[in-house]
Image (cartoon, rainbow, N blue to C red; front, side, top):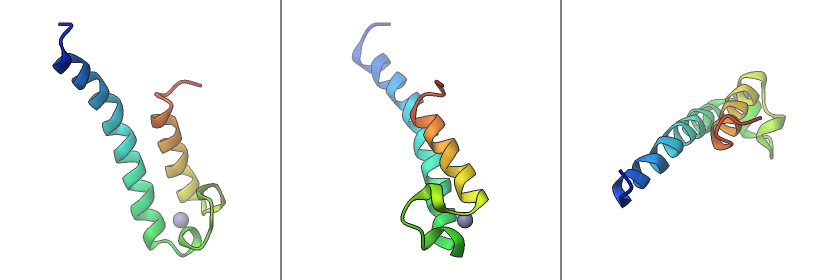
Length: 64
Ligand SMILES: [Zn+2]
């Protein structure tokens, strides 16, 4: 239970939701006129900010 592959699994469990959330935002921002022109994701449209917020949450492991 304490071997390297178990640790790898734990890392992947954290990374996959984060990368997926980032990809969702990235794909939105690429197509969205309101988001692709802004310099920060927080300045994008409501959908863009929501997707970015989900990415931030996933990156922080859902904490706070
Ligand atoms: Zn947008």
